[in-house]
Length: 75
Image (cartoon, rainbow, N blue to C red; front, side):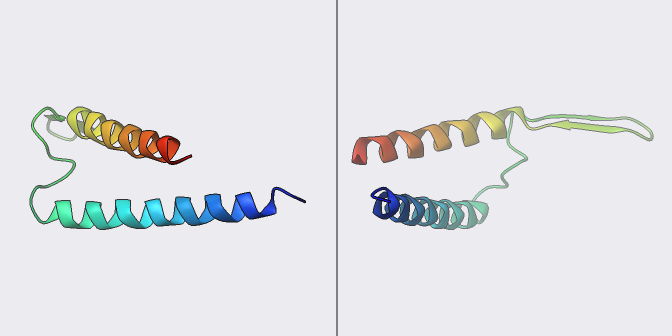
């Protein structure tokens, strides 16, 4: 049961990171429309719409990688 304090620290770190990510997402939504970036693929036909958020996925991956890298540096 020695790992219990470490689990508490990790839960607080993950919760705080999620809070900061949500705050950043909310603030960024005021400046640009996430999910409708240049580079997102939208194909519209008569009764069919295909949407692939390529640029949004890359940006989200970059941000998540940065956050996880920063968490790893804090250890």
